[in-house]
Image (cartoon, rainbow, N blue to C red):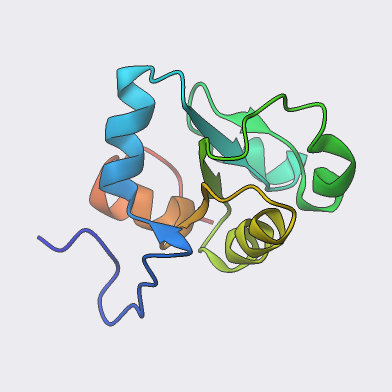
Length: 120
């Protein structure tokens, strides 16, 4: 099975697959952060345990508070991968070279890894 959604135009310099993200997240790697940029009402519907939550609009102010190195792999999660792509691009522009959007978002995570995660 492909790691990315069907017909998805995956961009390796900006994105990471749900499988690679899950592997890093499950390992407890110190140089990794799973960053969920969805809104609180979305988290109430579906979430991934252990993710750090910062709503997309709060990212600029929160970057200093996150206390991450510029090359830390930051896997950014949203619903389908659109908002997270914007956040990953923004973070890269701010010097966080390890920022990547999770291709397909939490919807693809549900489809590919954990069908108990509610799609909305």
